[in-house]
Image (tube, rainbow, N blue to C red; front, side, top):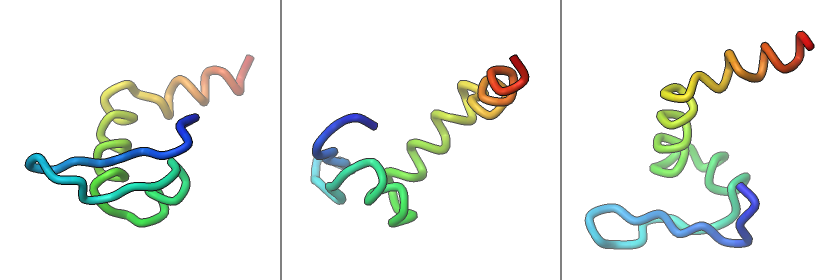
Amino acid sequence: MDSDTIYVMKKGRVVENGTHDELYNKDGTYREIFDASARSLNLDKLVNTYKEN
């Protein structure tokens, strides 16, 4: 998320590039990967726990 430029590869080819915000707002491959990672780490639960403290 803190990178200047992120390159997203699929099947050995760059399919997207940009900042986290740009790529996340595109609703493409990067967002799919990011959302899947967030779900697997239960980030929503972690964020809510942090807010409660």
